[in-house]
Image (cartoon, rainbow, N blue to C red; front, side, top):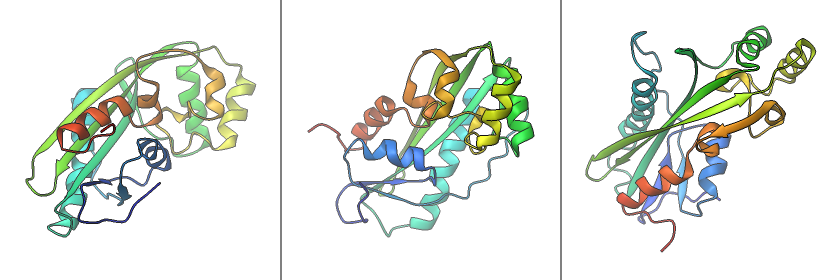
Length: 203
């Protein structure tokens, strides 16, 4: 459930992702959603950790710039997720053809999913950013399965071209790490960080 901004301590989620919104809602804490238009370009030599941490923080900072002092009790949360295979970052596919290409590279192998969470206290400007990495193993797929899944469009707005919380789950044989990090928001990490900013999930 989402709550309107108020004078009470609450979260501003700097994201338009319906998956992150749904995950944050499971914590039953007051929050609102504000889109972030942060620049997501990064240097080619950056590590996956650098990329997700910087982009999560950029998203939070972009919303901070629009809030200014309007919501002094707010804690802004930004998050970013990338898929990495053999050191190569796989972003969101631009079309079905690129989605199929990504799935071909991932099938029958293991890859890492990195998700970072950044929090900024509007009142003080204090910020923290951390990340989690999860190893995902995907079964070998037939060309027919790859084309059929790409055509569903489910993976077009997802890093790596698949949704582990959707139909893409049938391709995943195992994960090592946080499932929710693969979906888009590691809830354990998020709750720990929010606790350090005075927003406790369990009181």
